[in-house]
Amino acid sequence: MSATPQNSFSPENASILTVEAALEAERMNRAAAMVTVTNRLDRSEVVRLLEAAGRVIGQLAASDTVVRVAEKNPDAVWLFSRRGKSHPEGFMAALLLNKSGRSALLEGELDLLDPQDQYLVRQHERPAAIYVWASFTPGILAAGINRVMDRFDSPHYAGADVISTSFTLQGHRAMVRRGFEHGVWHDGRFLEQFYMIPRQPCTLAARLPLYATHDRLLRPTGVRVVTGFEDMMRVAAVRSAVYIGEQACPYDEEFDGNDFAATHLLALVDNEPAGCMRLRFFGEFAKLERLAVRKEFRTSRTAFDLVRASVALCKEKGFRRIYGHAREDYLHFWQHFGFQLKENGAPFSFSDHVFVEMMDDIEPSPSALSVNDDPYRLIRPEGQWHVRGPLELSAARQPRSHNPQL
Image 1: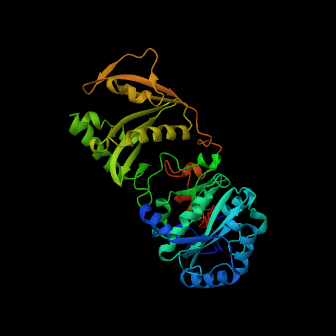
Image 2 (image 1 turned 60 degrees about the vertical axis):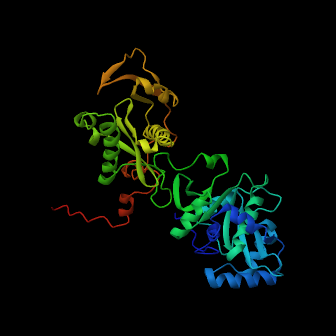
Image 3 (image 1 turned 90 degrees about the horizontal axis):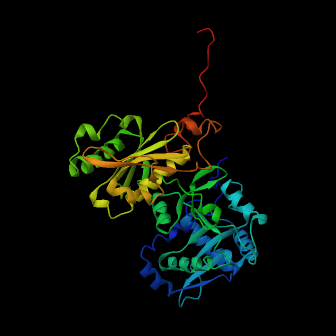
């Protein structure tokens, strides 16, 4: 079932994304002092503001609906005006949802043009989610949103996830700048059309996999699994710079014939290849190897991110033991992640360095791949088991007819 809102209060801007003018916090703090914010509504003002917003945004909920939502909970609708002005010129509206309302939103069952009353909480009730319904904040009025978000950071609301949507690249970037994470896990599905600031313990734990945090447009710094030739070229470039260029490792020793029998992780910083890791999988254990970070990025968290992402990938594949070789002078780095010297292991050397064997016992992820999984999950691209793959999309086509006489 699609969870995309079909009848949004603001189909193109039903989110905080119209706060894109608020790019600089200092400037916005100064502007906030020039904006008055109130949740005391006048029906005639609501009608006037919705008409003005509708000319810019498009179809909106009826004024009676907005007033009804605000009467149930005054914290749902806020009006903004510039100091010295007698009439409000902008607004922000949120749906303060109970647990059932949060599920209805993510499952596409919440009517965003006329929200069902049973999904909304009253002012004395703690919501499970705050859905940013719509905002109309021309010019300096965008600063008022910070004032409303301060209200939603109060103890009464601090445990509620903040959820929004965006339908433009500009909106995507604005959401990420404001601290929203792209995508929401719900009922075993990853819903890419939503954005969230997770604040409930259960949703804080359900985030993008550590091995799938990079997106060229939305998250230019992150880690991804290599699934194409161009990324393999990036991996080769990083390893050539580190091992061949810096450590004078012979080519045939660095590119040892195992690269096409392995999974590779690539770390990028502002879309520039910064580091990589190779993983190989055996019957009872996974092996981490070829960790490389370009010297330009060694003061960043790239090496730590790659190791954590690698361990997370092993857990998702169901492994319980990880094996690796550490240079003696780097053992302390690996011990930071829980690796220990292999029992009865002895130092050995290759490529002009002395290494030790190390082990780490891990627990598989609760969502680890299994033969009992949905068959579509098992044919998704490596490291993208949390999103629908191309073969699932192909299932929408009619199967070819089979002629038993052929």
